[in-house]
Amino acid sequence: MTNNLETLLTALYVKIDDELAGPRWTGRPPVLTDSELVCVAVAQALLGFTSEAHWLRYARKHLSGLFPYLPQQSGYNKRLRAALGLVKRVIWMLATSSDFWLDDCWIVDSTPVPCGMSRPTVKRSDLAGWAGYGYCASHSRFYWGLKLYLVCTPSGMPILWALADPKIGEREVLAAMLEVDAGVVAGHDGILLICDKGFAGKDFETLLGEYGITMLRPSRKDEKARYGEPMLKKVRQLIESVNDTLKGQLDLEDHGGRSFRGVAIRVAQRVLAMAAAIWHNHMTNAPTIRSLIAYDH
Image 1 (cartoon, rainbow, N blue to C red):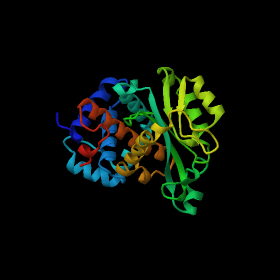
Image 2 (image 1 turned 90 degrees about the vertical axis):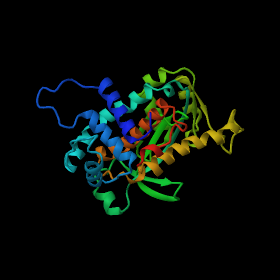
Image 3 (image 1 turned 135 degrees about the vertical axis):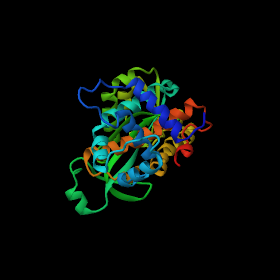
Image 4 (image 1 turned 180 degrees about the horizontal axis):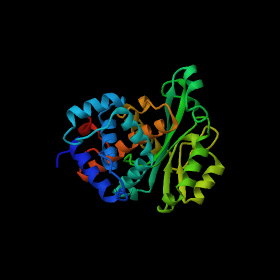
């Protein structure tokens, strides 16, 4: 099978329609089904369109064979925001149906998701009270927005993810994620969680132990070298490369969301696109599991 965007979207549509098909519609069914909507959203992220208006014009001209009907921009935006729960279920479905779900080595990190660049935006935005100010070390600057917390396997397959105010501590956010998705953790035995110094803390490490999770992180300046620290430098680059895929190839920082649901669905859209590419590359025995090159044109 040739790896290209059309084969990925076809395989994804069939899998969603087979496994997540909802109840039959009592009234007139939508012209664009939920399965097609998710595939349209994945294609938009993979092809790098941050503007929905530009994307729909392109899709009508070049992807009419895959999607005979596409709504107007306002209709697409409403359908997409309403599909946040569905997108989350599809991410979960792709992760659990792959061999990566059996991997007991997890990597966690956070990355900034800027949502505004000016003071008037901060005052007027619908995100006020949810977003906050944080510091982006990679750009050496402060930003206003959110943080994306991603727990994934070394291959990059998402396991858990969440958006949070940058002012909230990293340990607090991860603890909440593990509490909400305790069933996911319970389904794995002896998880090795690789993280950075920001998650350091005796009480937090004790909490992870109660979940059956062993933490592997670099040592701080005020403590002795920790067990397994020499191997961290190579492994830590994995999560950095995953974040680079989200930001560099899937335009995470150019999401364009201006409301709670708008930002959430646009971030979920990019996490789903990465998960779909990893899932399909694995199914087709592609040489590079997290490569998006076959799907970005």
